Amino acid sequence: MAKATPQSTAAPETALEKKGPTEMVAYDFGEDAGTASKPAAGYEQQTAEDGSIPFLYLLQSNSPGVAEEINGAKAGMFRNTVTGTLYAGKEAGPLVIPAYTRHEYTAWKPNMGGFQGRYDIEHPKVLAAKARAVEKKLPFGELYDEDGNDLTETFAVFAVIANDLSMVVIPFSSTKIKTYKNWMTRNRTLLVPGPVVDGKPTKINPPLFANLAQFGSVFTKSDKGDYFALTVRAAVEDDLMKSLMGPGDPRYQAAKSLKKLAESGEAKVNYEKAAEERQAQQKSGEAKIPF
Image (tube, rainbow, N blue to C red; front, side, top):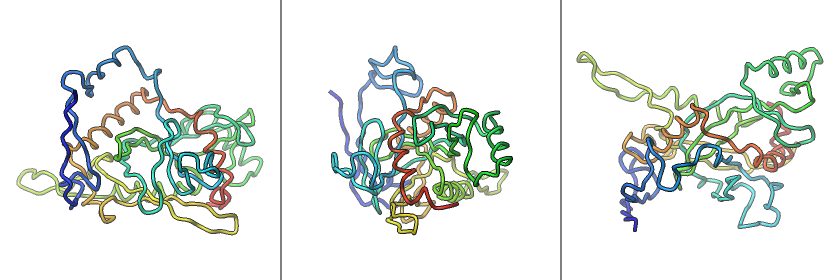
């Protein structure tokens, strides 16, 4: 039987010192446990084809299941597209550890249809679509491939939800791109004291997966329609330094492992499951607001 050791329930001062504003439980499964170098017992014959990474979406009023409040789903909450796990919204959304980012274009059938593929930003199909948009003087952001599929610019963030250590992909497109860039700029420009080199102190930028973020949502009104907008801040008092996690933190290690999976291509993303959620995002007031 696994042994569970509760972590301290004292109020956290910083993510680095106190493991952040969540309570963690450590399990000891002995030699049956999985590590970065070997799978857990029972998973030895499985590969990336046996599973896929879900998306994390911010629910809107027209998201699937929201009108009926299935499983308690409400607009402004967050949902895992594969497991259906719901996370609170507003000021108490999920705690997120970004692990890896990917700038891409995803192709979808017209009229909010299904997923057709993903392309790197320099893919010939993307470059041809951009040239076509210039030639036809299409509105900014409107791109179509040769088959008429919609091409959507997306910044995909592979992340770990600190609440339960689940792996997700968080898509930032349309007006969410500004939120993504602000989030990444804060993390990328943070400098902290580093090791002393030749008797002199240094400043270093922590790895992306050392940062703990608090997601949230805020109800927004516009002449294009009402919707919940995504908010991202540093998890502890919106202070990046206080929200840092060290290499010994299990959340840091989980996100570091996800980065390796994403870089290697082993992390398969479940785009098909995202279709219904994407439709709700496209119909929301936010999607109708220009950049």
